[in-house]
Length: 274
Image (cartoon, rainbow, N blue to C red; front, side):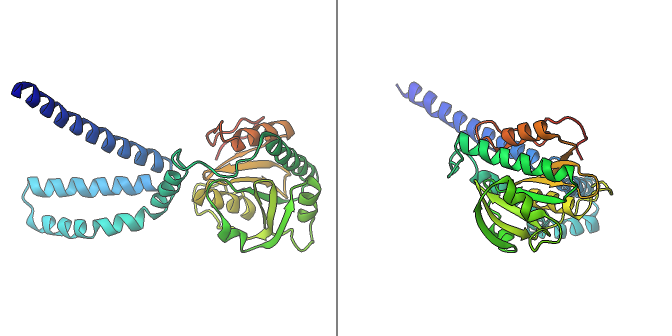
């Protein structure tokens, strides 16, 4: 009897260790997926270089270098929090958007169809006439801070209203329109500009603003170029370009359907991801 009890005790200890290892492995994996494709990858490489130098200092007994590395590690935790602040914020936001926290106020299918159709009609109309526009679709991460920089509208979304807002030389045309669910909550909103140095030089302020808001939130941005009339979509700090009416409609449907999430590479007729 004592042998059976000891067996179960040892088995439980091994099970605890396995669960512990699996949880840590999952956390590391999610962290690597979180920073993949961001500037944090380069920062992580720098940290690994510093760690390698510290190991070499121990191996060769380089006392001065050991002291210097120990001082670096003392401030390392604070430094990591500062350096990885955007990624940590994004990670916490993604955690809050997990399945344990169901999304409130999801649009019904007919409501979603209406929103997509109005946006598609308005955007393609403006693209043909080269009317520059920037439409932001708020998702699970709130962007109230950006909403408050604009002029409150709080109107039902229609293609006519969207077109009217972006007509040149009107009071609300300069800035972004922010849509929450099926309502236009504000117009002439100011957005943070992306600081990504790899952005194509041919993209102007409107596109950089679209990329900037999608870098700090899960919002979807639709942009019409005033110079070329080209339609683009921004998501997660990435841009895909050269949509026509049908490919734009399908991309928006796929992105705004909660049960059918898609990555930032949208289906489209042409263009390249930046």
